Amino acid sequence: MGRNRLKTALKTALFAGLGLVAGSLFANFRSPDYRHASLILKKTGESGLLAINDYSGRQVVALSLKNLQPASDLILQGEGFAIQSWYPPALPLPFKSWPVVSGGKSGEEFRARGVRLGQRLPLYLIVEGNEAGGCRELTIRNGANGALIRTVHLTPGGDNGGHH
Amino acid sequence: MAAITEFMGRHRRTLFIALGLLLFLPPLSLLPQLAGEVNMCGAVCPRMFFILSPKGIWAGLIKGVQNAWFGVALVGLILSATFFFGRLWCSHLCPIGGATELVSRATPSRLKLDYSFLPAPAFRYGYFAIYAVGGLLGIGSIACKFCNFRIIPFLAGAPFVPAFRTYLFTGMGMAGVAVILLTGFLARGGRGYCNLLCPVGALDGLSNWLGGKFRFNRRMRTDETRCHGCGQCVSVCPVWALRGEGKGRPPVRDQLACLSCRECTQACPQGAISYGRR
Image (tube, rainbow over the protein chains, first blue to last red):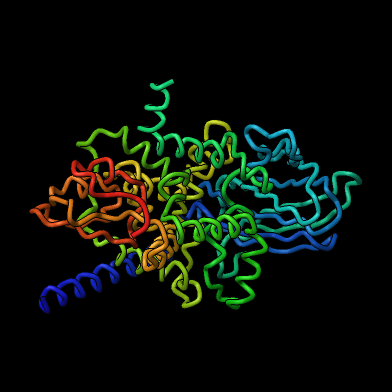
């Protein structure tokens, strides 16, 4: 009986340890072609940095954009990357209103209309080829009057700064 | 009419899973759309709010609850229901575990992987500890990485939404798909992810175990006086919650893993397993 208990306890400890190891490996997993970032749109005219991976191939930056300024018609534009959003849903239900998105191919402006105050706009920036020392710029404007809301510099180099 | 009733009775759980898929997954995403989302991320995310934040535990929790209010409400409802009635969400409605189980049922047996040798609760709570406190301890955060509540809706919505395909074709997306493939679609029972890695499943298992301590709560129970120990229930359990040698002795049920799916009830030739109070 005592031996069985000891065996069970050891087995439990071993597999709990394996779970800890698996969790640590998963937590440290990084993919050079993918990065998650968030951006809060507040004051108008601000500029800031957005670190992206120092990777020469195509990479995707998942950008969670939170709109905390009054303009609801947003125009996003940048050179050298495409912009996608997962809005609106594939089959939008009639009782909900969704941001209307259009454009976003590389070099083309991406427009999102109806982004309410406080609403989150999930975006994917698809950066095609990341040349050494290169820095890209994303500008966000008010679609209603063209006023600059924010400029964001995409700087390769991840969390350790960048080349900007 | 009798044929329909019989069909409904025999496939009740499958029909509930199909309902869960319709309610939660793209292209319809009915409940996420009610919460202002198109998938199970953002306000609907059920698995991020309880991660302990390195920026401050309480501040992180409050922010998490504010950001994922629908997911918090959903998890609250799930855990309460599990405490009193067993894991009905995980077994009957969860679109994520349901999807992997349905695909696994259609997968040829020779391709399936068997994880039943693993003492799942021990592994799961080791993994869950890192999931919950990894960021706080500086180990790193799992959060959205390998997220089952992201990968399955993205796979379901990929034919309709280009942005979902964009994510799935990144290294992170493909790693997530590989994990779902190995622990779900290709796993015997289709519930490997649920049983080993799902943080909502880990919380739900705790609630089930805790509820099992009380006599008035409903659970899967084995009448040991009727059990012949044939082991058939052990072989059909999708989450390997039943342990027994099948040599005339009743199997032992682990309430931390039991899914309350009632597959064992249907498999038992003696009718010794039932769902109810003690």
